[in-house]
Image 1 (spheres, each protein chain N blue to C red):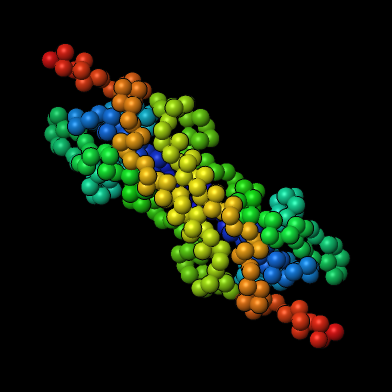
Image 2: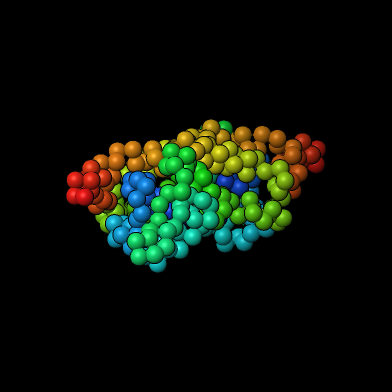
Length: 153
Length: 153
């Protein structure tokens, strides 16, 4: 049982943007921080923009940033956008007309209850709660401290 | 996010055996009931025997049956045996030495909490609870009613 790599890095991109505050981040710098390819992150970016989590600013000084406050974006919302489906068993999708238990399967009911519990916990975590220690996150992601930026100006 | 097909049918095999009471079931008849191949179920059987859920009786009138009471076998136990791993993200496994967040990742902590909730619900369901309506299950799986078998003798 595993989440897709897309989901994993979608959340990490949002964490990066949240750590970087309202400043624009370049996809290239996020890819460098996580040591993945730019192309991979560009593919993931598209659904995040469509879902309204992220906005892009074009141009030489462009980049991406969160479109919504990080404290309003739950992990449940993100995985719902990025996971292809939550069919824990193939018969969730097809209706499994071959299975004699179809329509009345106690196993499916149990799996659905377990999935609800899983998503319930993800619904209680937000992108903001994942990056609440901003100074720690900035250090780890190699992002400059806004206070230092202010001094430099 | 999906459980393996092996897990799905491992649970269904155990449900079949539980419905069939202490009587021996042939893998071929279980495969026919679920419309899957015998070979597929034989592969799944091995870890179920090793884990002590099922015992096999060889010979012409042989077959398989539960080795433990169905009410003591939780879905959590079964998926723990049959799922290759519960690494929701690849970095659960590898230690993700490339990721700057390794060792202190709030995302992994959130995913682990969600997984715990998922497994917690599965721990509250047993094979017996999935087949508690034995008469319904027998009808759906094409198994004879023990009372009718007694009359026939």
